[in-house]
Structure formats: structure tokens, C-alpha cells
Length: 338
Ligand SMILES: Cc1cc2nc3c(=O)[nH]c(=O)nc-3n(C[C@H](O)[C@H](O)[C@H](O)COP(=O)(O)OP(=O)(O)OC[C@H]3O[C@@H](n4cnc5c(N)ncnc54)[C@H](O)[C@@H]3O)c2cc1C
Image 1: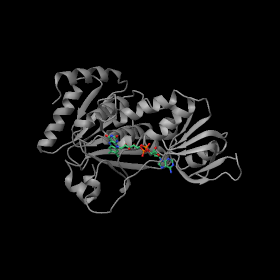
Image 2: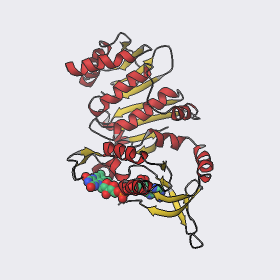
Image 3: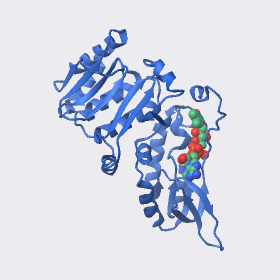
Image 4: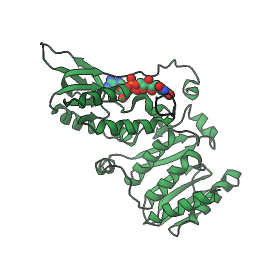
């Protein structure tokens, strides 16, 4: 199933595994199960640290777990994670096998400290470009904190389940059987949603910020441009953004940005963020402004109240909050968007 090039790349990647891993398959006699069995055998053939078992007891077939031998560290895939999910599979093999993730140590510490038992299930399609980020984020969380469990489910392999659970768009994430979120989500966003103490901690830190000369609300292209322009003048500049990158994060092909014949949304956002960070800009991620408090005297400071109650102060505020989809609430709306 893997061509020679992919097999060679996989062999190189899997040399980074430091703990043996087992691929525990739950199969039946369907062609999809035969396909999955073939893929798992090919993967195992690329590394001495990887072996396959076929005695899995998962009710979804075909599916498999990647388990770190002798521990309770594991992630699960229902279906055959090829297409856009192949990267998620390779990363899961590496991370279950002990290779460290590139997430920041602070974020990993927060994940380790998350309270409660969580069972996530993510419905994907193999052609979905927003799905791998979500799958990889939840896989990593389940590897770092064994009280978190995650299963990727290919909706095309389990269409009856997807229909019965009302999955209209991918990715759709369930936690404990209830819808947890839909669409692209970053690791930071998922962790912030679970970390109930984070609002209070953020509020204290943000309340203590000195006043800005220019505070930009919004971190899309408009907000980023405003922040770069201001910071280049050497004035104290901040950005408070609910979701840095804005609508560009949801865009795949961009072909009308002069001087760049083709780029992709996530790539453009990463370059945009790097450009902003080259200047002295205080970027406050995942912060939603709920109210402007006008200055009460000439030359006074404007306040921006955030959802967590913190108030940022600035001489000037630029509101660059962009636009969002309005929903009509009609059947098929999520499914056929774009
Ligand atoms: C699927 C899709 C494809 C597209 N394709 C193209 C294309 O190919 N070419 C093109 O030119 N344009 C395209 N666009 C449009 C383009 O992305 C937008 O015009 C552009 O992103 C607008 O930039 P903006 O900074 O004004 O707003 P946005 O990108 O909407 O950014 C708004 C920012 O404000 C933040 N925000 C909103 N409310 C608050 C609040 N209360 N507090 C704090 N922060 C807040 C958001 O989180 C975000 O960071 C596309 C858009 C979409 C959705």
C-alpha cells in the first residue's frame, strides 16, 4: 500500500522510536480490514520496535490501537488512516514510541495537569484538510495525559454511526458522547477549553499589563498589518485576538495575493505570525474582547474588557474583528459550506 518512497521515509522516521510499540488490530473479513491489516504489516516491517497483534476487541472494525508496550499510553484509529491522516498516523507512531512533541513545555505541563477523565472521538474524512490538526492535537493530549482517550473515526468507513450521531461536517469532535466542537481547532484552543483554571490565571496576568499606545483587537490580516505598522514606529503595541490568523486559517488555496501566485491559509498565517513577532508586539492569544470602555477625559485611556473580565488599557484602539459566517439554520448548511 505504501510506495517505495513512503516506505523509505517511514523507515527513517521510525528510527526515532525509543519505546517498543504494538499495533493492536480489531478486524473482520471485510476488504477494508484486509487493507488495514496490509498497511499495519508494512509499517511493522520498517522498524524492529513495531509489532502487530490481531486480537483487538474494539467493536469498530477495522480499527487499531497504537500502544506503548507495558504502559497505558495509546491512541486509536477506526478506519485506515491514509490520505490527509497519514501524517497523523506517523506522528502517533513516533509519539507513542517516546519521541517528544514540539509543543511548548508549558503547554505540555498544562495538559498533564488537566483534571477529569475525557473520552474524545473525532469524525474525519481522509480528504479533509482541517482534520489532521484536530486529530494530532487530541492524539498528543491522550499520549501526554493517560486520563484522556482519543479515537479518530473515518466517517466514510462508519457511515451508519456518523449518520446516527448527526455528523454533518468534519472534523466533528465528541467528548463523552456529546459534541465538543466542529471545524479546525488548535491544540491551544482545545486545552484552553478544558483548562477551567486558565481564565482566572489569564485575567490576573492581563490586568497587570501596562497601558499600550496602540491596542489592536483582532489578529487577522487587518489586525496583523495594523500591529506591524504601529510597532515599526517604536510605540508600545498589543494584539488581543480570539483566534490569531482569522478567516485565513479556514482557507486553503489563496491565489489573489499579489506577488505570491499560490499559498495556503495555514502557511500564510504562520508567516504572518512570524512577521508580527519580528517586532515588539505583545500578542495575547485566545482573548475575546466583549466591550470598549471609552476614555472619560481628553487624552485619557480607552479600556478593552475581555471575556475573562480583564481590562486592557490603551491610548488608541484599532478594532479589526473581521467577519464571520452567519448561519441560516437550514439542513445541509454545515456539510455543503465552501
Ligand atoms: C473559506 C475562506 C476562503 C477565503 N479565500 C480568500 C482568498 O482566496 N482570497 C482573499 O483575498 N480572501 C479570501 N477570503 C477572505 C479573507 O480571508 C478575509 O477577507 C480576511 O481574512 C479579512 O481579514 P480581517 O483581518 O479583516 O478579518 P478576519 O480574518 O475575519 O480576522 C478577524 C480577527 O478578529 C478576531 N476577533 C473577532 N472578534 C473578536 C473579539 N470580539 N475579540 C478579539 N478578537 C476578535 C478573530 O479571532 C480574528 O483574529 C476567504 C475567507 C474564507 C472564510
